[in-house]
Image (cartoon, rainbow, N blue to C red; front, side, top):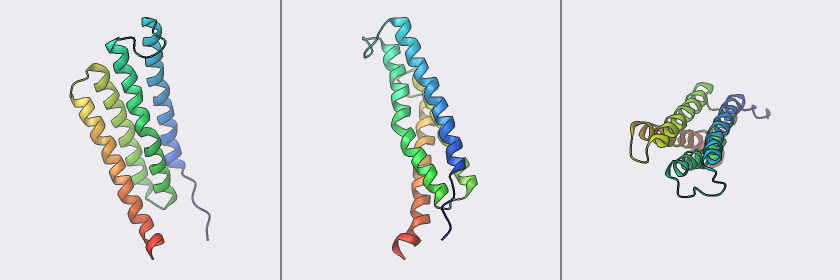
Length: 137
């Protein structure tokens, strides 16, 4: 049996996700320093919104990266891993931009959540197809 392939494509998107994490985190830190608020949001709506931008990103990032790596390791096509990774990154940027502008529904938030959930759905479905033959046969 050949050793599993290393998930280099997923690792690339993990690196981009890490960089996006740093950028979003720094935006929160900058607001905290400007407003002199160390814990929580201090009742400041803009800080609360930026904290949610980062929090929402963090809620999805780990799951998506695990799914990307597993799709790649289990033999999914590289083009699909690239498509899923790019979709997630674009979706999270769009969502962060939209949410940083307004708490209301807007095109950035809508596109972001749609791309993120579509990424999770396609990656999960792909994994089920890839492993079903190994698990049930």
